[in-house]
Length: 186
Image (cartoon, rainbow, N blue to C red; front, side, top):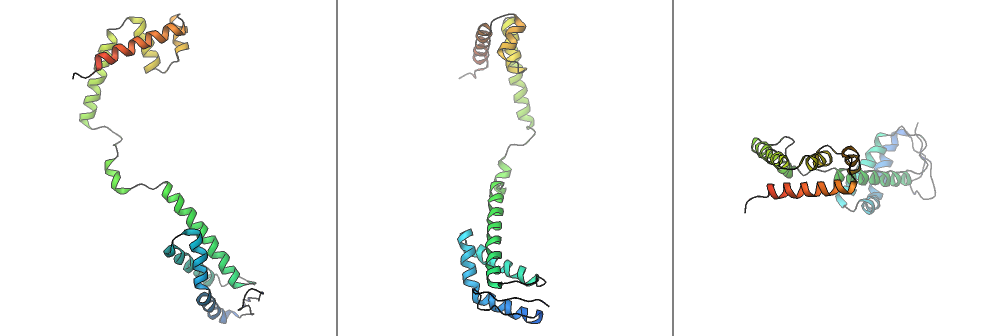
């Protein structure tokens, strides 16, 4: 036997047998529906979502009839509505954070380049290698180590037996040379 004991804030707070619980829940739902929607609306900012949350909360209470000794069913329903509205809001925020517009999926760059793009990239790479071959050995080494292999200028300076400032100037000159050689013809 399920009992719902009264509280001072519940006008319907009477002891209810399991058979009469459905009727009591329907009465509570009908009498408090507008207020429950307002509670959910304040959290969600959308009347339609608020109505959905109220209905879900009512169904949760309805299906959970085995809950023993609800002291104040109205207060309980308000608490469930508020909690579910907060949960829905959190879920919406999370979904919006990771939302991908399906229309823009076709516009996104593919993980593998097209054959044309691969060929163009290979041509640009070959032009860069030709430009690097025109540089003095020391400038080519400094450029390759910093720009292609990821070494710091200090590491390159130690390897070449030069100062970091000298390595900086070697890289600057190499970059300038490559930029000039790879500049598209106007």
